[in-house]
Image (cartoon, rainbow, N blue to C red; front, side, top):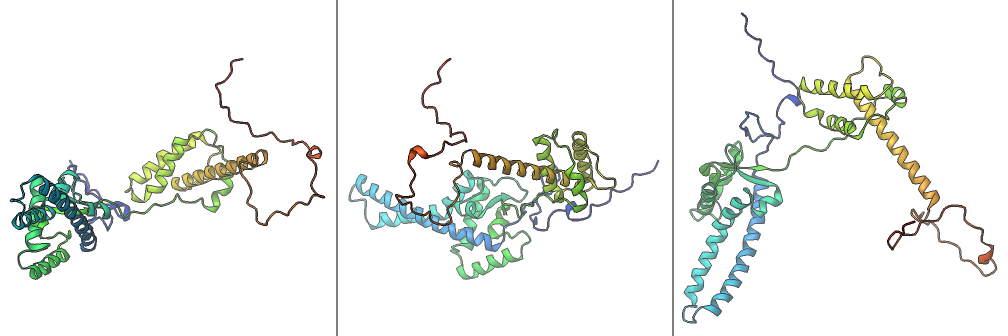
Length: 334
């Protein structure tokens, strides 16, 4: 009885996590997630947007509650001490209640984080809890921002921790067991590969009448996402798609050509024929009803003099069909 040989590690960019996915989050199925950890720049931008939102919200609440207090409470209670206590409540709400409430009810996102595309999650990738949000907010007020305890020294310490941490976490994240990640991927859209010149002659002779839109969409999705698949799954998927395409197309392709190149040739030829049919249809419609597609006038039309103006009776009858008028009433039954 012999042991199974070890499975070789996948090579190439398709067999490993992208370089930008540095959060190190692993799902419950032991799959590493393609998530980026938020760094100092994006988090400072989100903080600045949140500061503006906090200031606007605090001013609006102060104006509203002050007006209500002046009208509903006795005049003896509304004095300078009352407004000082109200300002303290507003300050606590802006610095602590604002991030806690938004992170609790908006899935770890404040308005600033929503705009930048960030989210607070637990260190294991789960949703952030109320206790974690409260801990982050209290540590941020006391040590980081505004830093009520040794402001300048705590600011330097907070920036140093964020720059040296592998996940870009701040002191509040380390204490609460959370981290901030990007919710938008860094992958750019890739177009489908074009047909190679040796396959042009074969692609022109293809019979694509039995190839439906669903199969063409599956081929396009594979070609645009094949760079993210690992071997041997990428090759098996290409072979399976080509077997479906070969069953509804003819003639057979040249021998020795890889399946991804054949799929790209079939899709490119199908797109070329579709674009050609669309141009022909538009040309026919423009010839029958030019009112639907008026041609742009490059030069101003010459003015007609009375001598050159023809009478309406001498105008030849149009040979093209007129644009059907829109029916306004209910259809009549014949």
